[in-house]
Image (cartoon, rainbow, N blue to C red; front, side, top):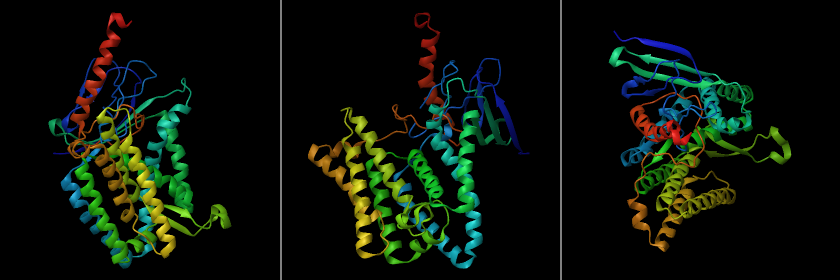
Length: 392
């Protein structure tokens, strides 16, 4: 009979190593205390463990980016439309106060985790080298034997607890005051994690996704009042707000312009794809990344300009999509690299120069075996060098 087990273990800072296997099983080596650094990798992030106490832990498999296929990209606008319409009907049928109370509690928890995740790499540089750090693991499984499945694998240490405590202060501030600064801190954290954990595998898929959401955004903003109604009714950090009366009322401003997080994340994952394409060319230049980044700024500035001219809400993707696709495509035409751009296939590898997400408590997900194999390739050579007498 299936059962669920919950385990909270204090992890010894050094000792035997364990790795994730398909289905949530663990493979462990050598005796000594139960140290389980899980294979951890993220979008923007790969690290390997060494016996040295100062080294960062292995990355968790849940940080592996979720790859968006062309089928996913084609279905995304339909799913987003159904979700948006569902929220609109909910706000029309049920009390807005109770819906927002439920959503506030939900995003309170998510916001704390996302913000802690975001500030963790920065805070790790602030902590002194001799800061006492103990490892912990919260494991929640279902089933038994070979059928055991890992539901939650929450790993953290003392530094993570400090980051969680700091993020909780912001969370309580948001929950009690709904202040725009707290909202934006959570919104930025969600955006960074979204760009980090969503992965486009090629430019064609990116064009399908951006093109579909271009139509989605234009229709729901200009064709109906659904998008604007939900954005104004939805009291959750799913948008960045910019006070228009900041000079008059200071931090107590209450008249805001809004930018949905989707207008940051969707172009962001496309720009991240072009950065990987730049690196694949091995020319030591980031031409397409900088071009798309400037294009995004241009598109956003044009959105704000049109909004002030016509005094009406504007679908940001109406201006961002042509800019983010058109500018890099024009550069590729000039450089004669259109074929290379559209034939480029980005795997789920982690860029070696990216420092983020090397140390954060996570809820582990599915691609455990892939994370394990990647981590073995990265960490084994380092261990061999450390054991070599010549390296000593």
